Amino acid sequence: MQVTIFLVYHDCCCVSTYRSIRGSVWVEPCEFWENSHTKRRMHNLLCASGYLDHLEVIKARKATKAEILRFHTERYHDQIELESSGHGGEAGEVAPFSGGAYDIACLSAGGVISATEAVLAGRVRNAYCLVRPPGHHAEADRGRGFCLFNNVVLAALHARTVDCGSQQYCRRIAIVDYDVHHGNGTQDAFWNDPDCLFISIHQDSNYPNDTGSYKDIGGENAKGSTINVPLPPGSGTGAYAYTFRRIVIPALERFKPDMIFVSSGFDAAYVDPLARMMLSSSAFKDMAASLVQAADSLCSGRIVFAHEGGYSKDYVPFCGLAVLEALAGIPSAVIDHNLPEVNRWGYQDCQPHQAFLINTIADLHDINSLTIDPPIEDSDSRLVADLQILLDAVPDAGRRQHILQSLRH
Image (cartoon, rainbow, N blue to C red):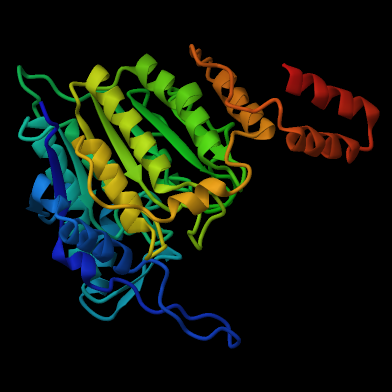
């Protein structure tokens, strides 16, 4: 039976929520990074390719104040509502907003909540929410990183209030965040919640540069419920694929969630201006397919993807369509002409230093997997030479020996 996908979209995706950026006197004013173009162009690709005909589409509803206050403080909510009625304001660090942004942010959060309700009611098997503004940086009392309200957090909390049938509720929630920036707001929301597994795969020390350490594993009563995988800049398809095989899927299988949410950001793509990773549309499709398969085996297919970051106007549409193909199980006629280029880039395989980090994190969380060998080509003499250069740069002989033993381990 074909999987039914529920696409949540709101027309206000195409309304500018943010103002043009203002830099120093030496920087010519330009459009703010987070704008409607990537979302609008993704929707346009769905329409132009005819793929939208395969999807059940619903317009988002606004989240209520009561729903927003499940996570955000009333003072913060009221600030956004008040300042939005005028010319806008500053929600927090790198989170300016314009007039009317409150209603748009409520639609964004409400869209993910609507999708959650539809999946839990069994009307659809899974859902993708093409909404903006994004949410995973938003904290309880402030916005951060282009985010006003934390869409995934609000939807996850809402899921716990919805009867799934036979008086059963979604108590155990898993959230996988592959946006290239750390989901600090989502981590904060469930830091002390042992019934929520949060996994973030992000570029190390990108944004925020003070959160997302692999040593952050959850609060006192929820040790191990947070799994951070801060991959080095330059990580490609191999590093992400190995992270999923070694950490993400085994962790989900051990946790046994009642429902899975995905913060789906496309800023780990090889052409994104705000990161330095090397993923292609096919890599995003593979990650999404793995998560859909996990949901099918663990929680009756209940999974909701929420659109987060991704700032390449040219490439986000192809990455988004690839994820939708994985959710719907229906291929499109669209050809990503960027694939030959990105696949030719060097170091797409999982590199030794990347595999070492991933294995370290898996060991920290006591995650066992049948697939433990990273996809590294032993015959690649360039990797061996690079490792030798790194070792030679360490002045202390004892330290060099310690590193070498760690790599062998």
